[in-house]
Length: 154
Ligand code: HEC
Image 1 (spheres, helix red, strand yellow):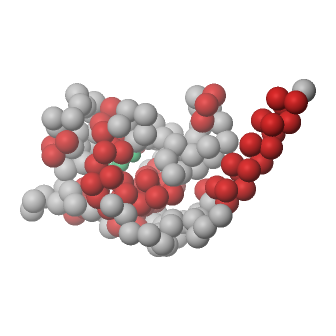
Image 2 (image 1 turned 60 degrees about the vertical axis):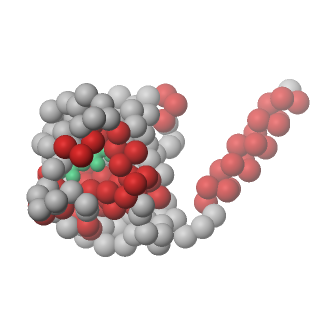
């Protein structure tokens, strides 16, 4: 019984900590058509961190579905989605943010691309992800910062 209470107290503490700060909670993210104008954190994204998140299987795992030439050495990539080379020429930063937060708002509801900053990640959600987003708000900003570096003219 004692252990249960310690566990509950820890959950309450952790829960309140995540609410602190200027971060926009997943349910409060505002889409304007196909864009999210406002940074989720107010802190500029770090493209180097973003590249790591794209390649990480436990985080973005973007390479499972997308080819990205500068990251080709990192991991064998899939081709379920389009290559992300030159993606910054096709989409603005605010559109890229919307795609990463919840691709269903930009493509179709049936898209296989996961919603990375939404509590509504779909029916086949892994049990350990229930009630959590796949990426944190800052990780989304980092990924968007990296995507902005992917120009054809590079
Ligand atoms: C399960 C497969 C899958 C994963 C994982 C995935 N995507 Fe996608 N993504 C797609 C598909 C498929 C599309 C094309 C739109 C459609 O058909 O729904 C797409 C489209 C995109 C586009 C628009 C590309 C263009 O050229 O128009 C961007 C940007 C993008 N994804 C970024 C990402 C990022 C960043 C990640 C990781 C954080 C990621 N995707 C993870 C499947 C995936």
